[in-house]
Length: 329
Image 1 (tube, one colour):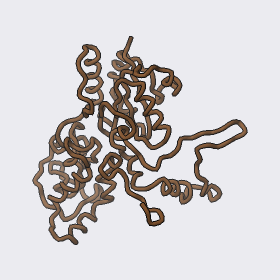
Image 2 (cartoon, one colour; image 1 turned 180 degrees about the horizontal axis):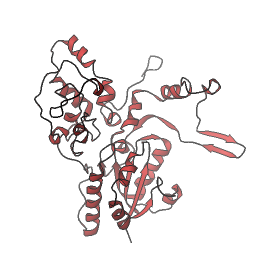
Image 3 (spheres, helix red, strand yellow; image 1 turned 120 degrees about the vertical axis):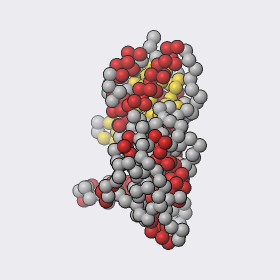
Image 4 (spheres, rainbow, N blue to C red; image 1 turned 30 degrees about the vertical axis):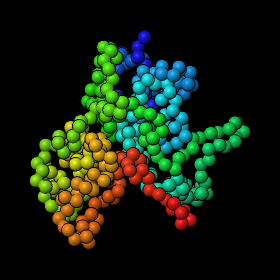
């Protein structure tokens, strides 16, 4: 019998699903080697199909997306029970990614923005919030509960391996899948639990072809404000680049396209907090020691928190912002 493969899409944009399809003809090798038993994005599978499986029946599950609803949590726990190997596939499952930026707010603020203050709503609809259970003449309607805090996959269930990226690069997906096929075909041992697959062991700066001169910075520029030198380090030129605080493995594709690294491959080895690492890196390039001037220079960075924690907020030391209600956290 073929090894069984499952793929699931929780709270994410769907880019990880597209990245798998972007493996082009290699997807035929995947379909030939594995029996795909659950991939609701592309095939008509139901939750009951997974519920009927024996525990551990699925050989490999690629789980993408953050955990932000009760449905996400249920599927994470269900697929963990049914899978021998569970992989946090992509930045959302690994670190929370863009959905994790919601942790700068709380559920009430998010709902108010969408259901009370939104200019796109008709006045009669404003203030009407979703509820998890509604009774209708045709029967009861149930929708998932929206969580106050976005979590990464490993904050809900045990995860065996991680594949970073937003989305993971197709060539890295091919490398990971081919390695898994080789392991299963030839009975080789699996990597140690917790291994980061499809990535390097250095920083993005190590694979960047640009020349770093460690110049001092008086101002940070947004991409539309200035045309960068294609050969010089973007950070040296005052463009925000998360390369010093990001794991290698993507082949520095963004910086090769004249755009600063966004940080989607997560923190480098032995770094607990990507945002804190980036703050540390910036402290060595800001051209001032005067606290007031330093604040002014930092003030030229558009959305520092959203930039430093764009992909890692839910998995960071911060985890979420504490919201005060009635004077209490």
